[in-house]
Length: 199
Image (cartoon, rainbow, N blue to C red; front, side, top):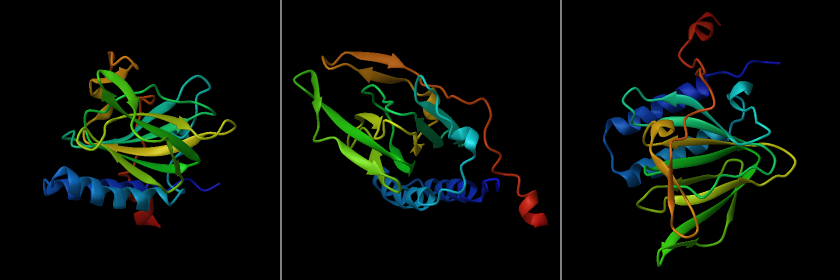
């Protein structure tokens, strides 16, 4: 079997860094960034297996890249069969693109101090991209659409998301702080272009 090429992820990271270099507003980041992410997730030939491995107990969050200035991070989320997040916030802008399988997302809002659904739960299939942020809607619950197989989505956040103080939200509006961290201790090596030069 052929090893996945790091080129697509490297090109994506470089393009996203170029986008942020102009210090655009959030609306442009989400619009242009969504197009970049869509172009990445329509190709399923680049993510190494170790960053797509599910866990039988809970979903996994693998760091793929963290910008040296913490302007953004790229993460693969791997959902085992039937796995879901609690209702949670992000506190920064984010883009979610489905690489494999499908997931359901249920947005929430606060109404009279209580948490209520903000519209219907919707399905994101492979290739779909959606945005979250405190400005446009930041609270949701996500679950794997399949009970018999894993799904993988690629997330881009406006910070090193594994170190961001965030909250799980209960239906009565209570917030429980958390810091997610990451499931991996090493990153994919997207910067070694020696094999490509030799080829």
